[in-house]
Every structure is written in structure tokens, then in C-alpha cells.
Amino acid sequence: MAVAVERVAHHDDLAPRARLSTNRFGLWLFMASETFLFAAAIAARYYLLGFEKPEELNQPLGLAITSILLLSSLTAYLAEASIATDDQRGFRRFTMATVLLGMVFLGGVAYEWSEAFDHFPPQSLFGTVFFTLTGLHAFHVLSGVLALTAVWHVGGDGRWNAEAHWPVEGAVKYWHFVDVVWVFVYPTLYLLK
Image 1 (cartoon, helix red, strand yellow):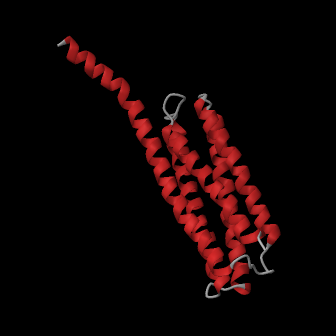
Image 2 (cartoon, helix red, strand yellow):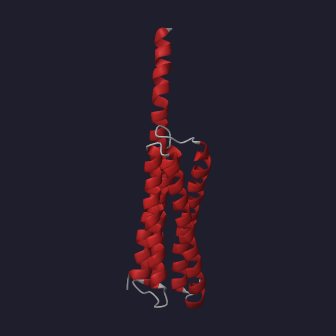
Image 3 (cartoon, rainbow, N blue to C red):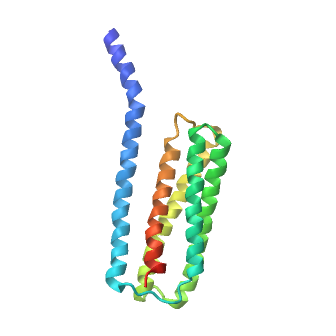
């Protein structure tokens, strides 16, 4: 009987660590599959258009929203670092800052779309590529904003702490993934000639 109790206790100690490893592995697999999706969309841009791009692209706006998204990676990192040290106030503040920066980025994309409709409508070749890549990325940013909002909301009662904060870690890792994807999308659309 004592051996059985010892095995159950040992299993209970391993279960959270095994679950965390499984969660992390699952997130990495998901992000790998999304990487292939974005790689295909970026490759299609080069296949269809080579290095051509219209002069009407709003370069300053593209740079501004890129800067905002990169800044949001810093605030996301600070949110995760805060909860890892049981700093609830820092976690909430930096998570909300990340959400707000993500919303500003989405607003910038929406503004860029309103300009883009006039210069390269969706039925044009560049318009198709532009709206597909930015739309796909904007959907992922919106998903990240929703995930971060959820962990912020649920964490409001102190549920996350230094010992248990996988949802925060997962949402922040996803946010960093979305930011890294933009680092490839931005030059693909705005910089290459």
C-alpha cells in the first residue's frame, strides 16, 4: 500500500511539469505550422510580383506601426517577467500596455487599408498580395490581443503567480511570434524594390 501511495504522490509531482512541457511543445508546433502559412504567402508575393512595389505605399505609416509592434514585444516581455516574480501590478500594467499597443497597430493597419483601396485595390495583383499578407497578420495580432486580454482579465484575481503562469507565458510567446512574423512581412511589402 505504501508503494502505491508513493507512486501516486510521485505521479502528482510530475503531472504539472509534464503538462507544461506538453503545452509548450503544442504551442511550438502551432507556431511552426503558422510559419509555413506565412512563408507560403510571402513566397507567393515574390512569385507573382518579384520585387515590384507601388510608390503609393505609405512608408512612414509602415515604419510607425512596425515600431509600435516592436515596442509591444518589450511590454509583453515585461508582463511575463513581472508575473514570473509575482509582481501582479507590473503584470497587469504591462499586459494592458501590450494590448493597447496591439490595438494601435491594428488601427494603423486599418488606416493603411483605407489608403490602399484607392491606390491598389484588392482586385489588382499587388492589392491582392498586400491585403492578404496584412489581413492574415492583422488576424493574428487580433488573436494575440484577445489572448492577452483574457489572461489579463483572468489574472485580475491573482490567479497567476511565479509558480503557475503558463497561460501568460503562452500568450506572450504567441505575441512574440506575431511580432517576428511582421519583421518579415514589413520588408516584403514596404522596403524591397
